[in-house]
Image 1 (cartoon, rainbow, N blue to C red):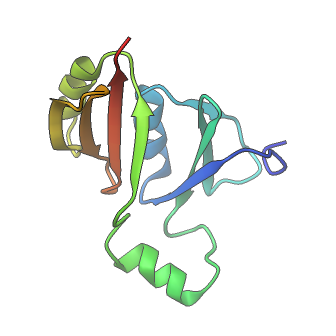
Image 2 (cartoon, one colour):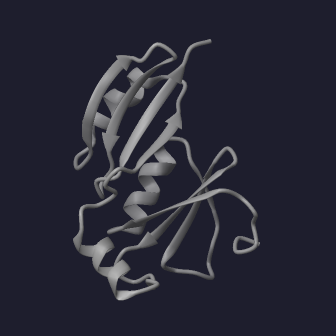
Length: 132
């Protein structure tokens, strides 16, 4: 079922699958059970899928891809935007977690209040609380 799903999916290669999965579950993602592929964790947020793959164990298309993911700057230019009901509360929670970085404190962007953090692997996550 997981392999044949026709959804938009975002994949992140991470150092610790379970730690990353737990982080994304804590901010509102849901996990799709997957016993067939131990190097992957499938998560959803609404209709969007987030696939976490083990940076060391999951196969790469080429040696260049492997080297880039394992040695290069992690996620340069990538931002995952996640809608949340209370950006201030999530900001306080994020700031209290060891190993997570606040990149941009909450600010009014006009269309929403946003804040941006870096997850355990350095991927940028922007949280958006939209105006009613």
